Each structure stands twice: as structure tokens, then as C-alpha cells.
Amino acid sequence: MKFFIPALFPLLLVDIASAQTASSNPPVARPKTEECSVSGIVVKLAGGEPVKTATVQLQNLQDLARTTSVVTDVSGRFELRGIDPGRYWLKVSRTGFVTQEYGQRTPNDPGAEIRLSAGQNLRDLLFRLIPWGVISGRILDEEGEPLPWAQVSALREVYSSGKRKLSPEALVPTNDLGDFRLFGLKPGRYFVSAKYKAGLHIVGRGEVREDDNDDFRPEFMPIYYPNSPDPARASTIALKAGEEITSVEILLRPVATYRIRGRVYNMVAGRRSNTGVIVQLEQRNSNITWGSPDRQLNVEKTDGSFEIAGVLPGSYTLSAFWFEDGRRYQARQSIEVGNADLEGVNLAIMSGITIPGRIVWDGKPSLERDELLVSIAAADSMVSFNTPARVVGGSFVLRDVFDGTYRLRVIGQSKDGYVKSVRYGSSESLDSGFTVFRGTQSSLEVTISSRGARIQGAVMDKDNLPVTGVWVVLVPDEAHRDQSRLFQKAAPDQFGHYLLRGIAPGDYKVFSWDEVEDGAWEDPDFLRTFEDRGQKVSVEEGDTKTLDIVTIGKASEGLKLCGGNYSGCREERMKSRRTVTLGPYAPMRPASTGSPRLSARSRSTPASSSSDKLKPCAGSTRFIPVGYTGRGGR
Image (cartoon, rainbow, N blue to C red; front, side, top):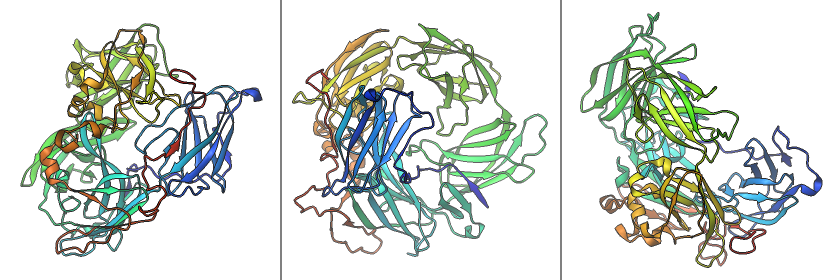
């Protein structure tokens, strides 16, 4: 049996073979004297060797469909010509190297916007590309035998809504020898996890194949390296630029799993068959930012009965979907799986309700694009099938909405606009979301203000020089920090200037760090250490305020809590977690019985070299603020 699911990870871009390409929407012809150009060279971080056939891509920020690309020649040089004045992103990519944006200081920092004035020639840009890292090893079963078709992931800790979660960076299957190779990794710390589902084979490009001949195998508990089912007790692997860490070995052991048995009842009028229904099991309160459902199957029996095998104890959401004539029908139920099979679970598929709504503008209507869209997402699920509704004549209709709590988002208003109010029936729902119950019919009223405040200024370091490759962060006052919508971030342009727009009235603080993880500022434990370092600012509707700021030193330098670790100050977790750090040419450690093995080798310059020591922060981009004349000048 073969089926397809959307790819979990972006595929690597193939190098562009043509000398230069442009979008299908050519820019308006301009006098030659107004055309701009961008040129420079791309080299390897270690040794400065030119990188040929790297793709240099310039994207127009005023029209994202307009992109111009060129490849570097044998000497690593590139030149983009005939460019209109405007605002752009510039990035360089090549197989074997981490993609780099203009203005970035490390691979995890933001790039800088480039502003080109009429006739400007931006020259002598230098990109130092960081080579990929690799983690490889083997997955074994309880007998020490290789385990083919196990799914191995490299995950990084990231912030999501102020909480630490794991984000998959790479996913590969093991081969017939149980070997895996996770490649394309940026420098950093990674968790490595392995799991195995009997009969489930990930072939590639999002293609998944089921093999009924493999069903004899037992279920295995997902394991994080070296040997823990709990990531809080796992070890991270520190990967340097261009480093290849080998012999990461994980032993999977059989575990007792259980079955969920039940029946689907298709209650849609005129339907007598229960076949064609998709049943999906999704874990609640997962520590993973996103991913595929834990189990998914098609109901094939006419009586609607189904059975899901290999389920670990835990909290889940069980859903059933049926699609016909472009409409979705659904049933959802929260379940708990303990230490026994779960029997008699019934799912009654029904049609959703239709919710009408209208848009009310506070101020002159202002759009960023040609149309305004309203979308909703369930507050308790990472999977959403709701199609955004188009606003026509100030009205919109949300179809196929089922029981549950939803959060609303508006797409397409100008960057100076913000959602001021969301009313569902008689209840204000902007902060907490709105809850839908079958049998109650209400409408939505969404108020958008086109007069959001602006905060602008310059970002400087302690030496009063302009800074790029950092985030400027707007943080609401403590009473409103549970509202993610009030947080904003912006990256300075090539002159160190930033602009925050569409700000709701209120009291805020503005921060900027030399180095910080994206989203860390929504973690109360992290922000508490820097509370007195933010600059206070209050805004009303329509305000424009100027605020120059000086960056705070690296976030880790300002934290003394929990031994300098600010991951929520989880002292117990950090006591049990080890970080494996292996530099170039570290010797292989022999493994004792039952212990994982890990070694490392480097494909790059040895650490003892007098040249660059593969520090991704060490001048990954040569940044020259062209036209900069001092504080606040251009």
C-alpha cells in the first residue's frame, strides 16, 4: 500500500545552471542611470578558497514575486545588474554549505535589508560560507541487530510561544545496515532521536509506503540519544562548522503498546457508507513544534469499525475526516490511553457550522495586498484544515467550523494596521479566542485599526557603531505578556536603522541583544534577567516615536541563573543532561556493553591551524554600511 503525505522538511535547492534568471513579472523599464548593481565574492570560511556555482539571490521586498539570481564564477565572484532602486534581501546558497543572508553574523541571526537608491552600485560584498555539519551512526534493535527503516531525526531546541520545544531540522530513514546520515546541519547543539513503526517506510520526497510483511515486528519506544525516552534526560551533541560526528549509536527496545478500537458513524445526510473516512491520532501537549500525526489510517470496513495498533500510553486527540464536493466533515474526541487497550471509541462525523462575519475599519481602510483574508486555527491542535475566508464588501464567511476554541488572524492589512477587537456574539475574544458550540449560532465582528503606532530608530553597539544581524524586540508590559500578538521584532537594515509598525496602544519596552535565540523574549524566566535593560516607551494610536538603542551583550553573558543556562532555569533537567562536545580529530571512544558510541572527525581545517578556527561568528559576512556617515546618517 502506498500513499503520500506533504514533505516534512524542505528539499535542498538545486544549483541554478543559468547565468542569471528573473521572475516572470519584469520590472518597469527605467533609465540606465537609475539602474543599480550588487557585486562581490563568495569564499569558504576556512582558508578563503573561492566557492564557484553558488547561487546568489536578490529578492524584492516590495514585490516578493520578483527575484533575480546569478551563480558565482570559478573565482567565486558575482554581479547582479539592471536592478531597480528599492528594498531587497540578498542570500547565497550552495549544496554543502549553510545558506547565508546579507548582514547575518551567525546562521541563526537575522539578515539585513538592503536599500538601494537610484544608480547605486553596491560593491565588494564578501560572503564566507560555513560548511554543513553531519551526524551519522546506526540504529540497533534489542538483539543488537541493525534496524532498517527506522526514522532518525536531528532536533534543535527553539522557543515557541515562550516555551522550549524541539524543532526537527533533518529526518532520514536507516538503510539495510541500520546506518543513518543526517546532513545539511548548521553549527549548534542537536538532539538525535530514533523511532520505528512496523511496516512504515519513508521512501523520500514525502513518499511513505506501508509494508504489511513487516507487521510481525514489535513496537519500539522512541529514544533520544544516548538512551532516554525523555528529551529532558537526553544528551545534546555539539556540532561545529563542517564537522562530521560519526558512530552515534542508539539501541531501540520493544515496549508494551496498546490498541484503540472503535467505530465511525457517518451522520451526513444521504450517506449510508462509512468507508473513505480518514482516522487520525495526534498526541496532545507534544514537545515537538510540528510534525506528522502519530497514526493515520483509512476506514475500509462498511460498518465503520477501525483499529489503531502500536499506541503508547498518553493523551491524544482522535479525529475522523471525510471530504466530499470540496467540503469537510469531521469528528474529534480527546482520549487517554493507559496500560490497557481502549475499546468502544465512537466518532460521529457531522457537518460543521457556517459563521458569518464582518470587518469594521477604525480609520481609513488600508491593505498591503489585493485582498483581505480571515483565517482561524484550533487552539489545541497543530493540524488545521480551515481554508481562509476572503473578505468581500466588508463581509466574510467561515465554513465547516466545528466545536472547539479558535484563534483568529487577519491577513492582508497594511503593516500599519492591527486587529483591535474580535467579538463572537456578545463576547470579546481577541485575547482568549472564541469557542464554538454546535446548536448556538453567532457571528464574528472584527475591528481593524489602520492607525497603528510606529517606533523607529538606530541600533548601535557600545562603541556607537551601527549594528546589523540582531533583532530589535518590542515587549508589552508584564500584564499583557501572555498575548503573543503584542510582541514584535524587526531586523535593522544595512545602516542599522529599524522600524516597528502596526503597534497597538499600550506600554512597552524595547530590547536588542548582540546574540539571542529567536523568541527567547517570550520566556518570562529569560526576560526577568534583563528587565531593567529595556527602554520604556508608551504609544497611542497614530504615534510615531524615535528611539535609538544600544545592544545588550550576549544573552548568555547576562545570565547567572542555573549556571548560565536560561532554558527556563530547569535545574533538575540540566542536572541529568550531558552535552557531548567533540572537536576536530577527537579520538573514537570504545563503547562499553550497552552504551552508545560516538566519535567525531572533521572535514575542515584543524583547530590548531593559524587560519580561521571555524567560528561561525567570525566574520561570516563582511558588512560595510554603504553610505553610512555616522549616527543617524546615510
